[in-house]
Length: 313
Figure 1 (cartoon, rainbow, N blue to C red):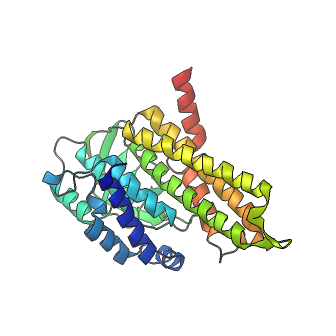
Figure 2 (cartoon, rainbow, N blue to C red; figure 1 turned 120 degrees about the vertical axis):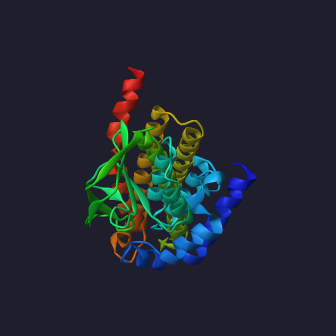
């Protein structure tokens, strides 16, 4: 990782540590807009999070997809609800066409406008708070100039989803494979959540005492947590290799690894924490719900496995 990207990671991590405590995250997910607007403003103004993938001549930071992935990974660690994923995808959609809407891009890059891309109109990220909505169907990108949105009741309260119905629409151009880009960014967010959930579990096993010893000292539990660590490190390598050289197959591979890893870590976390993990007071249940919700978003793992199978046979 470059020195600049590592600095970006550290800056976002510091903001999250200061402004996104578990209590703050719960407050944000229960708020009217589903995210902490003051933290979003800090991320946009101090980090330029919403401007990372926008070229400098269009008012952005001129960064790469990996820069956005690093930020999403750090936000994913604390399950921070923000509009970043949807807005970044909307920016990439606008940038892929011959004549980008510079005014819309400027608003998205500043963070004053919220964007989203529709892959499944029943489950749209940021759908009920978005100002700029673009649909991607694998062939074309279509701007939804008018639309109606209805917030959905979902298991994962840290990610607001909505059903969105189009009104007036206009075709922008060819879809550059935006679903694969979305898969890569979501995978980065997932691996961040997996890493933090594992950290929380290791810390708990060091504190929880049974039979006069911390349960983390028992060899059987050490082995389980070591296996989870290997899962996380391996998946993270696959994900960032895919981001560095994106292809449809690489995107599917990243999603499979990310989804399976997050599900494995959160399932073990529930077991290792015991009954307390499924109570509302525990943060582990939020990670568990995020794992299951994210695994179904943008296509479940089985669809990506079928795609990979088609590449081989």
